[in-house]
Length: 124
Image 1 (cartoon, rainbow, N blue to C red):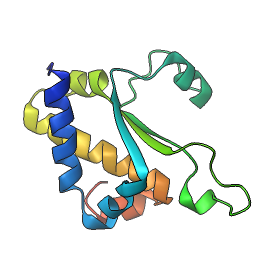
Image 2: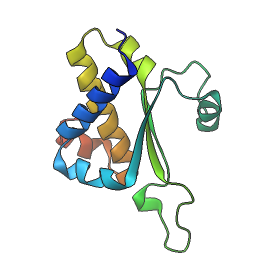
Image 3: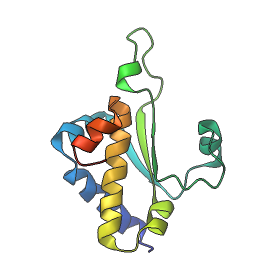
């Protein structure tokens, strides 16, 4: 499945609107960006092989690891990777669902939420 960048961005915005308020309220201070694929340097820094089909990643310092004495140097960013998501989905509905799940999981990493807490919200 292949979409234009504009259509993919529209689906990302729509998926963000469907995320529960408990998660979505924290998106005000996070940059969400769509990239075709993760940069090789990003994968290397995370310890992944160069062909890892990563769907998304949170890049920043989780809230539960922050210190007032050492604030983050860069803004929190969620990267959504278009091509791996398109490759794994067979329909528009499946793509919308996977984008929503990916964004919710990455926001959860920012919040320091556990997989169990995500499952309780329907993202397990």
